[in-house]
Image 1: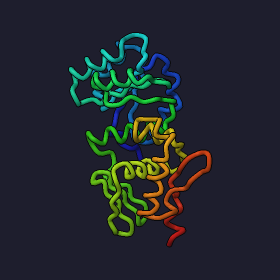
Image 2 (image 1 turned 120 degrees about the vertical axis):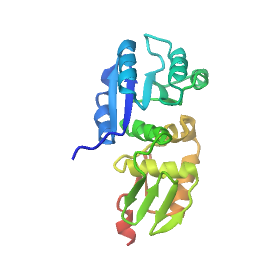
Image 3 (image 1 turned 180 degrees about the horizontal axis):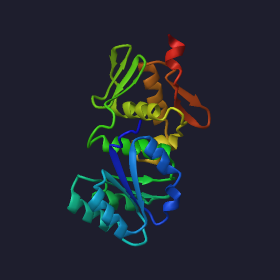
Image 4 (image 1 turned 60 degrees about the vertical axis):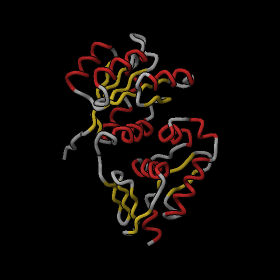
Length: 232
């Protein structure tokens, strides 16, 4: 059965080969991806394909990405989400200028699909819903209502903890480092240096079950796909 791809992303990068491993992963997670390396091709797809979001390299050689973002915002308003990306480090002033120009996000992008997928999904959820609910046995996470239900009992989680749990569940085979989670949820890699993520994981375990998230010493966190079978 061929899945409908409800989200489309148009990517502008002068080195598109770096996305070749990322695109199949995005497609598996219900994204249609268009990848171009020139402004002319980008403009053509922009008008004909009407993507939900665009990713533009911050230091793209053919144009000033900040000015181009301002132009896109004037032309499309909020119909298209605009994300600027660059290999780290990104200077604070560049982030400030990008956000002031109308960008919806600025990311340190290491071309890891497991980071990009939840980041884009969270951003585009504001436009339309990809999946109303993620249901696993007795556990339901409803990202339209920001509601978690475990064995039919509603559980209230703060927004950051809800997003953290959803990202882990969306990518159950991936061990997320603190740096990745900091980038996706807070858009600030400096969060990884604090105990913020540890505290949020602790709170999620306390609210739902201690086995729901697995810790990997020196690596990070992953959703425990077996926790429901273990506690039955």
